[in-house]
Image (cartoon, rainbow, N blue to C red; front, side, top):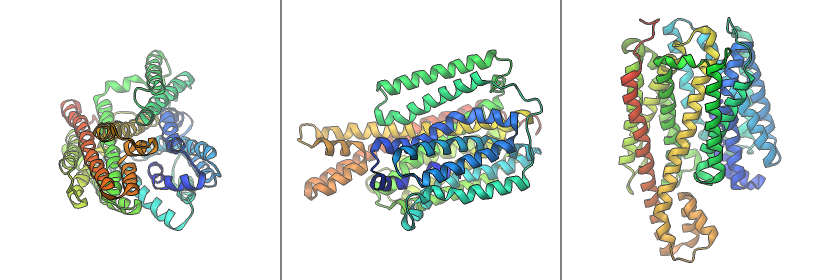
Length: 485
């Protein structure tokens, strides 16, 4: 449910423009309010779960998420919708680390825990890929608020199941509260995420983005310094001395960097380049999600046989191969069937990588630190995904605009049309349809060619990142934890 809400809203944005008269900036904040609050509160929520009870915080998170979903569904204007989306992000931040730490507490045998984490990780891919499909189906039959209202029955089932089946657990030696660390982590992660999200929109050199990025980095540095000196740190830095923890955490972030960044490109490719509807595009992403879920269920068995190092490295290598295949076929004659093998490789790699790396992170910590460790893992996933969309999207946009600018130079193009043409392939194709004739056809052809070049550049950047990750994992990640040995 939490991961589905990262993607389900995308197909409803045009409807929000029509029904709520939302501007482009307002649409950006409707989407971003969720991610910013979600990422900023994860570490704090993990610490609270260890201190006050993981089941208790999980239940609170479900209630907050459900309340935010109800409010968002019946919002009558943009500003309340943004506020309700932020509240949903707070609920998501409370459920993810506490839920994963509950899994870690209930399944203490390393083999059982690995299987349980594999099932947990499989839902990530399903949520990401089912979102566009579910959004398209709901919008075809109901009003726009249904994309939020669908969360309520899931919340109700989660509340009943948790109350009946989940035991309470908390750290045996809870640390004192760390309000200074909490504020520094929220401010630092929130500032960095804001800059990452807004960079492609406002420009990476804009004063606002630079100030947010510099301020966020400064606050994170202050957080590290504070946690290093504190006798009751929210995130004990000694965790990072364990290569099993730190390298696996980095690998998780890199995997989601490529997964969400790749999905960002693929949804545009399917809709703008191949002409599928939002529902059609979502259905064509389902094979990736299905393979991700299947691989996540089998990952734990492979880890038991050959160890974490080879499975995590293989996952990153398969993702890299999938990105390379998609980059190679980014030509005017590309079809969905040509792109499908690369998408499947990305899904297979992510399905192997995420549960193996997550199990390695949790296996490096004791039960008393499960909440904070789960939060650190979730933060790596969230920040990795945000970076993937931002970096890959920024490379695509920069290369696309540099190829399109010469076309517009010296021509008397209305400012609104020029902004649409340079903004995205979809905008350029809309202008081309409006113009019509040979001029419109020429504009569409150049825009498609520019998008191809931007796609190849973005995928090549991602290949460099994940390829380096493979080498780091092979060099430094231990194959098995102390318990397994």
